[in-house]
Length: 316
Length: 299
Image (cartoon, rainbow over all chains, first blue to last red; front, top):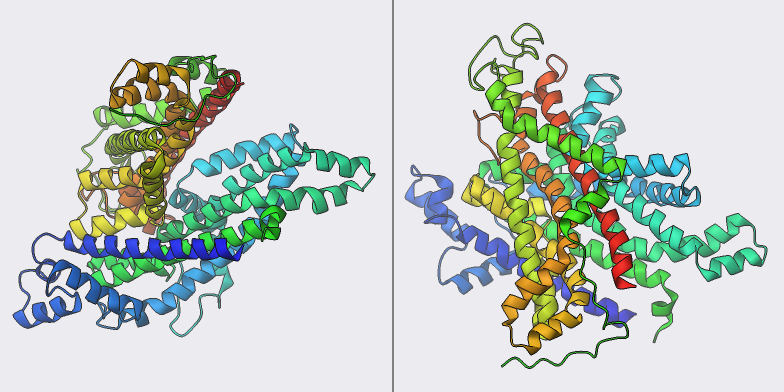
């Protein structure tokens, strides 16, 4: 098991390395001189020279790349072109805020989806099951910003006036100081992530409930509750973990647009902001951080899949 | 010459049944009420998007009243943030979204299918290399990939289509490869090889047609995502540029006045929602019909 995890970690590192190359080459796609393209025609020669140094634009392409990469891996990604502050200081709090947002969404969505999926499977072909099927299908179709706007219309400005439509952060306070502000962004992400987990949980559960070991457990006269919790669910979680990982990986992309919609001060909001300002060092850093999140989530999914699968766990 | 070691055909490989054609697939899918609802929804929004510009009462860029006039005063649904007719902008604002989404989906699914079939047919290190590259590509959430390049090169529509398509590519390739794995084993492929038909002709002429139901489902699924992505990127200001009318852009321009003049947001949001629900219902119907037919073929 540890050998497998080691292999996966290596692949994760390899992924990050390729991502760094793509991010670096994307900078090269700027027409003409990157520094000139960013600063515009009125830039003074001194500022151009300073930016060229910061973007590692001197020397050959590989030289530029490795000089840039050297700074990336030591968390020295230069300073923001918009604010002048070091990139790490700018995005550090954003990374924390987004982590809070994604963690809250995942902690609510995963158990909820697993329970609803299981329930739907146990009530197969009843009204509950049909309603769950239609609702998850509809929710799965909607783009996340459409879900977000609909929620604002329903719960904030139109029908009910329960939660604020945008996030207002008071400097010095944490994003979780006013939990009512978190409700809509978290709910949007929960609604966007859950449908797939519910559907796969239902399908896997149906398969498991049909298996011989579940029949055996029932024949032994175990109470239904124990059959489901001790025998069925643990066996269904393995395949579902992969889908959960995919959904969490999706969550990392999904936060971008949801944060922008609710003006939540996280990496997504910052990414759009820096895209608007063409703040290249910040964009580069954020894309790499997003890829890092993705690699970590996948690694965690592998750990869970391995941990719940006795065949793999006990091997070696 | 191409001499490829292949696994011996399994039992039952002697029976080859051609996979059902797409037309049959759609007909079978239409037996479900959900598919019909989905098709009606999709066609309705498509009709609005393509006929809308001709029946709009005003030009989408014409100023007809004070900004954010309530419904009934400026026009049937009021005016937007600059005082333009909401209804006219809504009617004119869907066409580009549809064209861009269909284009991106077509390119993404087409290229993804080619890569997937090529990987499955080549096997060995080519397959391994392509799929590992795909795994790496998946580390970019689709929207982040698009943002990275759109921010650097600028919000060009061709780039938007290309980036959405490239985002689909590895995802489609993975699915198509999975489906093609069993097709490349079938006897008609070996028969075609034995009479010396070039490999690319076998891929395009023999293998791809047998993946039609997989491709139809993939197209529907990716179209739903494309619509969300293209509209989302416009919403973020990286798609259609003002003053052109566009649903995603309309939502962003007018959401500040959601309480005063909700129609300018409600109309485009409802249209995008109904459209994606429609395409996804059709996709769901197609995939259920495809599973039904595969059971008959694979058994």
